[in-house]
Length: 256
Ligand code: PGA
Image (cartoon, rainbow, N blue to C red; front, side, top):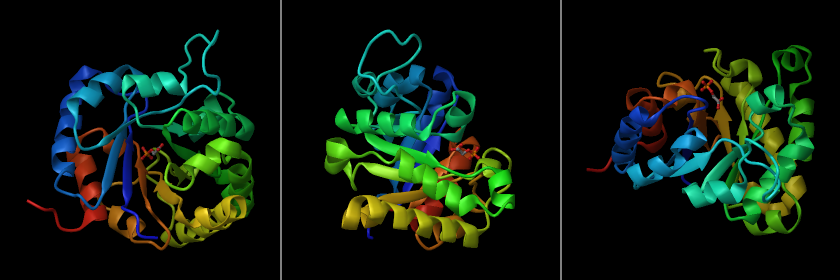
């Protein structure tokens, strides 16, 4: 694989317009790392403004509905995200799987809807601490990804260029506990196998990101690990000061 590392910030339910200044700083500095693909997923309320504010980085949503339109109060369709200026969407984040009861089948339908309307997709999977302590992590994550991967025409058109997988152990998200590099490498290999089983050779070129307490101090080790194609970053993506060292860790020497 020779794709650019993909460093994505997930702002979750953080930020109002005043946080756009951080996005501008991230955008300006990212221009100096042409070897890295950088993106931010702000709350939906900021997508259009962020799109206006930046010129280099990608802009994405944090979730979408699987249906194209209709009576779904409070939900947002993939085409509406696109219309607001998004070029990708995160689906299946563990916070949505846990707090909104999203099943693998729902995540799959969302991923298919997003690909169909031309968005790129970051599909999240990851085990709980109980799964890991019980020695079940790899089996659980393999089943999750098998059940969540987009199929059919949408997938055929979008894989591998428009699909990424984010491996995010639930116990590592927002906790400051980061997975051991050897466990990340092992899980990325499991995911690669499942991607190839689903998509054949094209599965080799789907980027697999790591997420869960990535920060300036651990980014180089995680991004340098075999099979890790980038990072999905929560807390450390909210300021340029915290986020840019992660971009730098992915991109080597900056250009002037
Ligand atoms: P974190 O979040 O970096 O704050 O652990 C990662 C994520 O949820 O994507």
